[in-house]
Image 1 (tube, protein in one colour):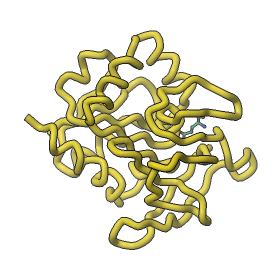
Image 2 (cartoon, protein in one colour):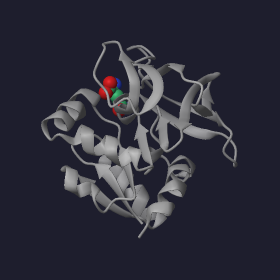
Image 3 (cartoon, rainbow, N blue to C red):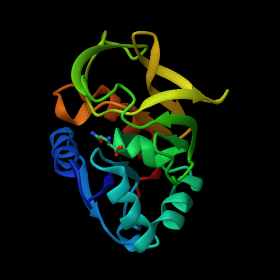
Length: 191
Ligand code: GLN
């Protein structure tokens, strides 16, 4: 299995490291054809505005959309969640619109912008450690969006078919249950 990681900016190296620890090949994605060999794709945390600009310049939006339409899984963490959302507010920003959620950027305010908190989850094994860094807040979600993790009652880990979104950074902890949830779907595409 080989998983692409959008490697423009942000913490793509931490994601690649987690994949290697699990025993999965990581491919750095910067051009459309880097996706050819990938069975899944991760959009990491960082600055969504910078990543979006790169996606537009490199015409990656169509390739990523086609990738999703094939049913291949995509995991977006933090800024990656913003890129995948259907709607982005505060400020409004274009996005790929691959999951039916609306997100507010920097949704926890500037004063307490980064924190670690327990995320209640339906995934086996008890709560996840959530590292939130200037995290977006999921303000609405469509009927097909499954809520897999919550922080103080609000969704922070969600899935719609092959698209998984975490507003926190699972790649910054040892717990890789959120990544495995996404990898399960990638297995089907391995050649
Ligand atoms: N606040 C950032 C953004 O809007 C996301 C922060 C992160 O990915 N840690 O893009």
